[in-house]
Amino acid sequence: FDILVTHERTLAMQAFAELDPALGVALLEDRPEREVAGLLDLLDPDDAARVLERLPDEVRHAIREASGRAGGAQRLLDHADRTAGRIMNPNSFSVHEALTAGDAVAALQRVAGQGTEVVFYLYVVDSDGHLVGVTSLRRLLLVQPSTPVRDFMVTEVVRIGRQRADWEAPHLVFPYNRPAGPGVDRRNRLIGTITVDDVIDVIEDETTKDIQRLGGLE
Image (cartoon, rainbow, N blue to C red):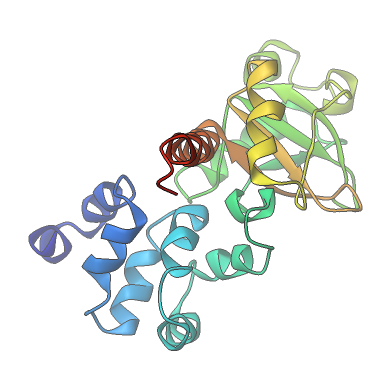
């Protein structure tokens, strides 16, 4: 990990994201806070949040002062523990319902490679950020470029409230064969995306606890 950080920071953090958070903390805890902040900026906010929540309070505060993109992870930690809000990626992509299909494709191309969470479905919002619909990338590319998004979006959307327990997320994503689910606040404003990899982490954690209970080891 030290060699990768020195020569290929992005690759180092791609590998880091696959590690158990406890091991990740052990790799970072002896490094200067500013360096840690820079490294965490290379992670998705939900991955960075899993590391930050295990760091001592004084270290986490110092990283908050030095962080850039990792500020998104700090916002996730403002959500209650074990809630859907904690596992959302706040950098989700959405389009306004009044945009045409051509404009939506152009907007999608502009955010490519900027760390924004883009899956096979695009979420559609109104002028106040309320989630009003969803459309697939396939549908977006097949309609005429001049067609407004509101004319072909699907308005029945399974939403995941930020206050819902995180173990409920798998039951809201998997039954609908979706790679992700939109996270909303109490006013139905889009605030993030919960993807399948986030859901799998929750399932693994819950299953581990169940097995530990069976063996009296929890």
